[in-house]
Length: 504
Ligand code: BG6
Image (cartoon, rainbow, N blue to C red; front, top):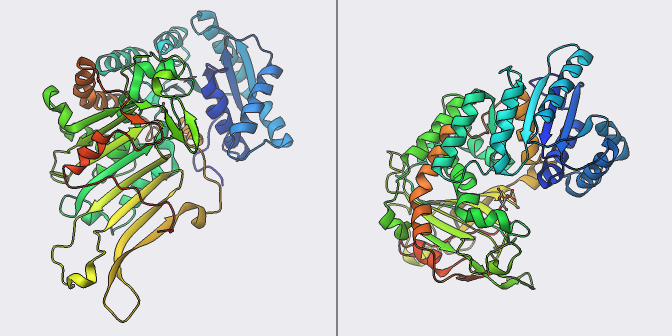
């Protein structure tokens, strides 16, 4: 398919080009955009890293990554050769101003060669402690002086708490316009996450009942079988709240709860999302325990294999009190959602890897059918399966075929795999193309990030003030700690995960 918005001649400069993110995500995504001809004819990826590599060695390393992680599988020789021509490497320290002067010279040369201005994407694929100095040096050398042509891209974590995120925002705003800053939350690039807006606002059917009059509760689950793997160092400073809830899961909540935007203009969509964050009820420190539950995995079994507990993972403190699981009940104080609980949960080393949003509708106001007919009765339920299965499932009651009037629930299923044969782009493909095209709808604005931190600060403080004494409190391979069941059970609900296909 041809792009509606033509991408002008572009250079993508990746700071941290020999790191994991570049290898696993960025290059496979750019490679696929290149195959699909979304990249312009005049196009260059310039990798900046500390390792002493030639262009050929760098390309070989990237080739391996593409073979391993590209959604298309192993690269075809013809495709790779064409792509490799657009990739260069430069050994340079991100702390050294000479690195940025080199980039500036390269851009000048490209402008000459390509005969006009060059779109610049300056991507910080580095640990967060480098964000500030890279930004300052980009500013110093004037790499992002042209506000229309230059964009800086920042990965999460964006700050560590409200104060540090404000500090980073202020620093960035000294150098760049907000319109130039692309803060990545890769969940927003997922196909199924983008589809939430299409589902809600491109159909007349659901919006009229999308409120407190018809919806009983909303549940968002993002559970992973994986543990912290080799990210112990990072995870010890983050934990589940900062790693998943502050960004990805609150963004899912915003998409479910936001008011219809007047248009799909980037700021309009983001304004409506910030409205949700601002309406979330903020807990008092002393009531956090009523609304939030934490957990940490101990050793256990995942798919028949014995796995370590969190405290036994590499680079993790043997007495760590970091949470690897969090569940929170939020309320949104506005007309649409007053009184509707939003239950959020996420955890590592859980029984399954699944991300799903469940909209649980209220029971019918009056049951006309005799009780014998409705023994198996359940209220309507809509499940948006984000991953790994991608689809939407709507549950309603139907009469069972037969001579008696017996009702039971059935599911209507929209399955991406059945409905579409074309491959689904990876989140990073969508996001990188948007950056090249200058569309910031799917990126976090400064006020969004700060509002998300603000709402979590009481929980962060309460948990830091009183470290848990009963960790580990769930075994790897389980559904999280018992307290998480209690959190929802005391409201008369339970966590719902529907089967991904029609096998019930
Ligand atoms: C990252 C977190 O942002 O998202 C990881 O740092 C987590 O801890 C990952 O595993 C989950 O992303 P996905 O796309 O695999 O659901």
